[in-house]
Length: 429
Image 1 (cartoon, rainbow, N blue to C red):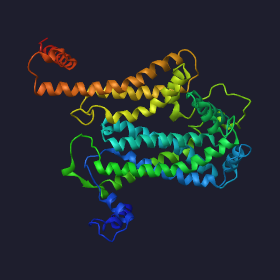
Image 2 (cartoon, one colour):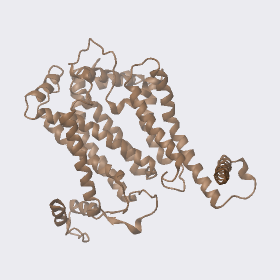
Image 3 (cartoon, rainbow, N blue to C red):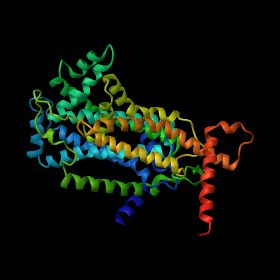
Image 4 (cartoon, one colour):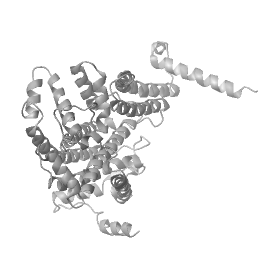
């Protein structure tokens, strides 16, 4: 209660129109506080603010770790051990940074799933910038995974960077440029450290552009209807709600860091890097496993790289899907089944990526990869078909031209099934 009163007194004088003598920071601040938003946003809209919280946690903990880390192949692993054993609360700071990365990807995957469910991808500029944020975040996470210079870090960097050699004409030169030599070594580690240190601030800039476009179009809502007339100011309707989400996130992260600090870590990476000993099973962190499973499922190297890239970059295509009459699939049971099947397949692909390449996991990976890419065209067909059926029920088309339509067949099938069930239900025993 005291926290609520403090926030209320701190922001009580914010509801006035912007004056000409305000600087740019004040204008941005007041535009955020007084931003009109739909009044019916659920907890699924909390993950944007949670992603900002994850970014702040990662940057703060990363800056503290960088004070004691040494980007040199001879000392990198030992410097991490020094942080864990000798630096005051160093074990906690590193645990927060490692598990905070997992929290970051959990939040962003849920954020993307919510956008697919409620058709937020039709906000073209916002979605395209958000997809770029995902790619940049993956690059940051990959470079950070290499920095401890453990056994899995070294071989993961070797395998993933070597994929660029599949690019025709420039592949080998590109790999040597990334390595800074003819193999993963000291130059590679220093370059990855610089990228990992600088890129989060580029991520912040992209996030600002993302929020700018979001404020231009406005947020979607669970009902999928225009709610501009009922819009409410962001404060205090959603500042306190986001604060609750932040408290829950910090609590969960604290429990993981204190009770299960190595839950998301690979045991092999607790060994120092050994270029002469290849691990039996090389795999990336869990948030890359779905893409890694698709990569392994394609026998051709170039085809596997294309599948890996398309597994994420296919998000760039979604804003150009044909629009339906409804915003979202909250009333479309068939599209919901398809969507949750896609979510389940995503989790299953992550499981397959962690399994060895042997029967039956190799066949399962191929099938799951095909299902993953089939979801996108089937999703479009599903919500367009549903819209067509609803429109035909409201205003049936005249003539026989629609008899050759796939949508007409779906509509007729729907009526037949409905009449059959109704007649069976009303038939006396």
